Image 1: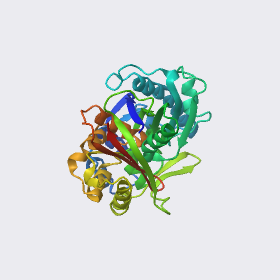
Image 2: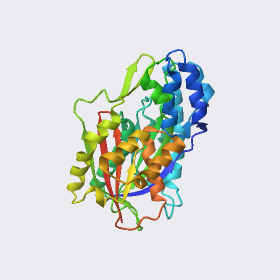
Image 3: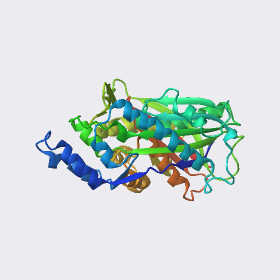
Image 4: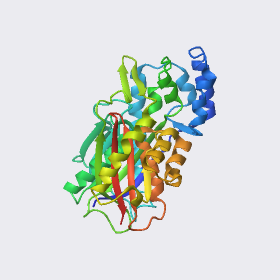
Length: 357
């Protein structure tokens, strides 16, 4: 069973209070919605207190072309990707000694909020002293599900190569996709929810993981809802990425997710009640509520996910790594099971079964 050795979180330069963002959005959308005050209740109902951005709030008040925003995306992904990798490979709480860059066999790079060719992990390899033979696996377009999917692909890689150590870097700058001239309710909701974040996870095969109780990956499973492209994603236009965000997501979770989770766990002779730790990507307050209702889990099992949402907002794929890091910093006894789960465009789910051993 491959093990998760460490997690590193980059610190975004700007932490903005939700109330300040709300006032900015009110000014921007006041002429477009006659009921703007009623619609802005989404900021309060979401219960987010602050969010992380890669640029100060004033920067978003000016118009920026897609090319300019994408340049900021590349620059930021390299800078904060390097920071998250350094923290991951040198994390004193998780590692008895730092992991050398030359020990890394492959880098999975996860993102959906910008474009780069050569891809970002190649640019990172020109900054940090990785071996030039390090394998590069960029994965684009999985949205919020990308963080979980990245660990799943790293798990499969380490099954094939049990002596390998691999990194999964998730870099998302949702704020750079903001469209000031998009007067849709989806965009309004997006401005209340999404933020920026970069995180890195190190996964090792059986023969590369050192001793100690760690979350080990037992299995992973993907699930796709047929003909659900319009639920979540991007509408790509001349001016960049326009958010697609259906109001039906919470109800879809309640009706569709439970049988997916049950069938996954049953393959390993487990049920939802056997899961001690629920490491959920916090897509939003309503999404967390839908998890609890669909899976009939107690609210305390989503406490960590909700805390991350309150403090940072939804950082797309990177968010679940911050939730995972907080679980790994606690003393979890050997034998406990965890379920890491994230939802994304498709409409889809990525599920990972963990066991602390």
